Image (tube, rainbow, N blue to C red; front, side, top):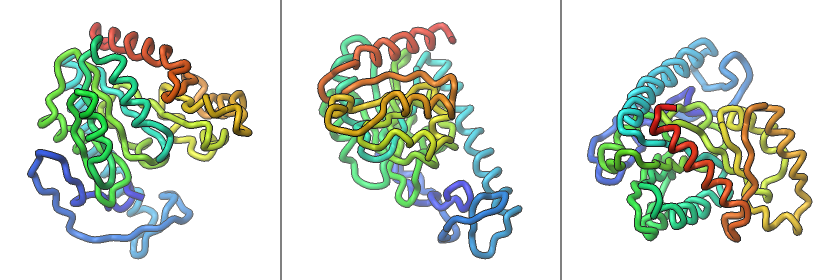
Length: 266
């Protein structure tokens, strides 16, 4: 896992950013038991815990810098997290199309490879910057800080950060965002909040997407929401279809209300 071995360092490519990130050692990783909840050949459990603490501590410093930068400019930053295939980019492109006349919008896109999603976003007419993480499985505060230098979001705007599709590692990394928003589609099974509790615990809002498919699936909506609130009693839940638009207005209302709070330092 990346917080143990730091394997993503040296793999990142940010559009328009030429700074090289060096990674001194190629490492592999697997899983195991012990205080680190992981196993890596040649590393003790105590050493792995120390490495993880160092990586997250360093990330938190970058995240704090990003948060101050957002606050000084009245920018609402939302970190969108999900597993691959949840419909995150479809939700984002529809949101941009419907809100771009009301709000200043821009996007940082995270993926291991390709600029496909950033190109989809740019077709909506808003600024988007792709960050390719290579072997890395998440965005971190340092990557986002560098992306901001090139993207330069407008003051008092909304910045969407579409994280790498992964319900594990992005939960651990603060990017300086105001909120993590986890998108779960009804095709993934209602027990995802129990299988990946760290992500649902870290999120303030869960968007249950693709509800137009519910008539064709054995998905228990109430049970899914119950599982999410078992992990995080305070999590808000919105049920939407990014394809048909059902329930989407509640998402827009949440963005606008949260954006207003950001303007007054809420």
